[in-house]
Image (tube, rainbow, N blue to C red; front, side, top):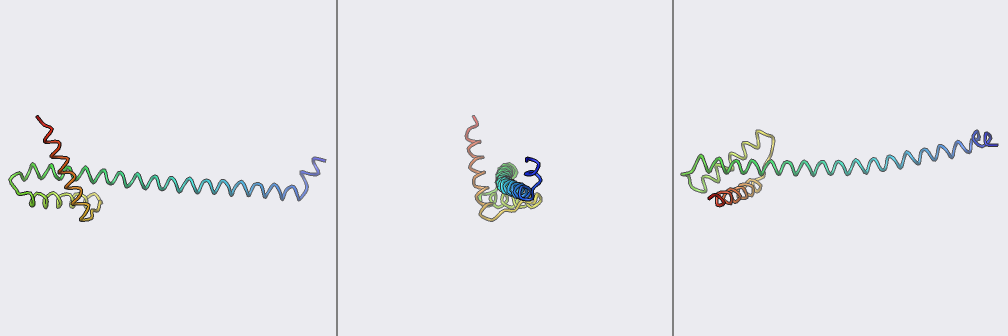
Length: 119
């Protein structure tokens, strides 16, 4: 009797439907997992790029403060912005004008805080 059930067309149809259902479920979960992974990867990439931009902005400020001590603040700001823009371009990193200004100002504040902590 079991042999008759296993060999029947109806059982094979049910089994095929069950397999297709499992494949559909697996595909759905895989798609969701891949979407989450992609979003995570994009977020990590944005975070990494921002960290790199901040580091280079601080380098720009330190460079200008050391190399152009006698220059005025507006000139130093221009030089730091220009240096950062050129350095970013060579690395394939783009900056908006607002980013440049904000990053340089934040780096300058951090630099001054570091200087003030020195004995």
